[in-house]
Length: 300
Length: 308
Image (cartoon, rainbow over all chains, first blue to last red; front, side, top):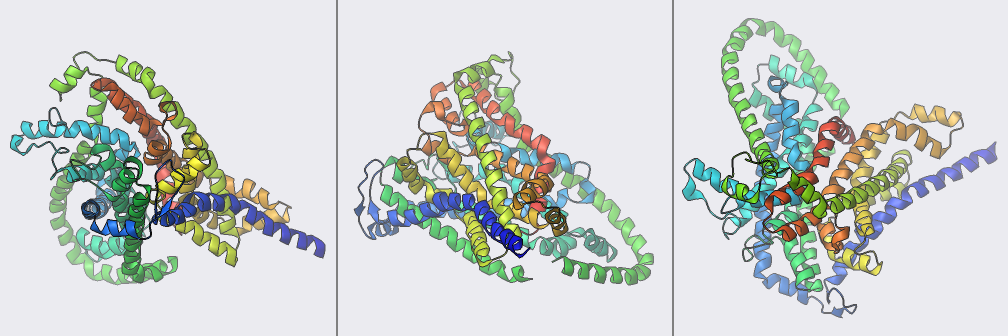
């Protein structure tokens, strides 16, 4: 009897370890080691196909501080983050609240799916499609502007250094609003209905209910969605890479695109790694700020 | 969390009963006054919702319609329907390379899903059923994985995969996709596992069920909704992932749809109808997935994040 119990206990200790081992290996090898390796690489000068790395100390980081393109990229990433928070967090929360309102119960399920469709579509399809939309000769956007008599506003959106980054950002909003909206809908559905019923009886209006019930109740989702959106913006690669490749010039450069260009095109793998380290630090700072700011609400 | 909600609820209910008495007289008047203004604002908001739906749908509609046009018509008749419907654009796109990309994407996506579900659910089983210092460390290790991003790992992963001789193979994508999907998957499934009542497994243990049996015969069957969610989320990620697919795969015959489409565009130059047909083909599987599994997606998302 005692022997049997010990057997089970020992078996119980082996099984959990065996069950979790594969995932720890995957995470260790493909997520954590590369992260450490990246820090290490930042101190060396090397190229893709040469196995030798030359130690250069902090010189890549010194170069980083004086690099105007890094500054442009960082500012573009910040613009990306600000605009995305407005549209994908603030607007999406309002949208989700409206869709969950009893008034739109009939049409909401259909709208929810429609808004979510772009989320499911590959970024390369979306980017190729927006190439057609922004096309200066036959593009939908300029054709539309001419159609409604605003032809003088038409510009080559992607070919113009002042508009290129905004054209890229606009495409991201179009694609991603549905995603965050869906996350907010899920959060709103978990709010006890009694809260709204009680507020109704107290005579609180829809807007009052939004601020006094919805927002406090979805605070955690708000925090998570904001974190997702801001870090996503600081990391953005696909959209600018496909639409403009950072151009014209470096006007729509983002940190990730610059990292890729340095590493794989200019073959400065070491400098590319330093840019990647900067990206890591920036996203980590934003994550810490977010946790600090919203931390008080998280302890309940 | 639920306890505080209970408290709020009962507080509010008690308050309700008091208020209903004093309210009945003046409430009726107020209700009549708001109904007209709500009707107007309801229609305004509805208009806004439909306008937004139109902004989302029209470009996609345009993509489908234009995929059936010739180059001349796409260029000169942006808004109209095709005068001749060029259905052969689809056959051309398929035979000119999309079929290969499609099959590659399918392969990579399916293998990734299988590995993520098996490895992820096993880890979630351990993390939800056992408590020790090591389990806590493993949990933090897993959650920390969510914060790590592929961009920062791009250059080291390229080096590592080259060293492993896996660069320019489908494994380069499958292994990295699995790794980056695991943290979220484990956390979603773990939250679901935590909600499974312990009584179920206790009776199974009494019946002589092994640990593996509890995992395979109790936890997995009960977790179908969250596993379907995992499948949908992973399929969506693997089908659409662009950066790794572009950097790790060089040869055209191995490319998946997202990176293959870029080659496709360069090869076609001005054959826009065929390019658009290829884009539509690339899109169809995911939209079908959304329409049929939407319920699972939303339900799983909500249930998975209960105790995230």
